[in-house]
Length: 130
Image (cartoon, rainbow, N blue to C red; front, side, top):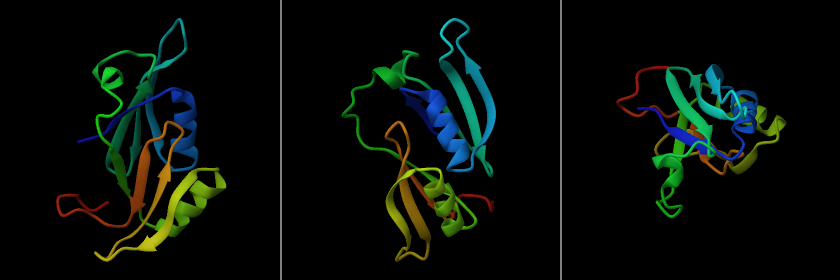
C-alpha cells in the first residue's frame, strides 16, 4: 500500500518532503500548460508516497473535507537524527521525539499541505526489515 496525497502547492510539498524528511524523488509529471504537479512519486526505504496538486480534480480532491483524519507513518533508522533534519528545514513539529509504551521512538510533524506524518523506529509485524 502507499498513500496518495494532494497539496495546494505540490512543488512546495516536494521540496519539504525531500529536504526536511529525506524522501527521494522518483518521478514528477507536470501539466505542460500550467506547470502544476499532476502526479509525483517519492520513496523512502522500501515505501512510496504518491502526490499531486489539488488543481487536478478527482475523487481524492473532491471528497468532503470532513472525511476523517489520516496520517502517514514512515519507519526511519535514527528518529532523533531525522527529527533534527526536519527542524533544520523548518518543518512544523507537532510532537518531538518520545519513547512510546509499545517500545518505539517516534515524532510527529505536519507538512505544507496540513498532512500529519509520524516518523519512528517501530516496524509493524507485516513490514519487511528496512
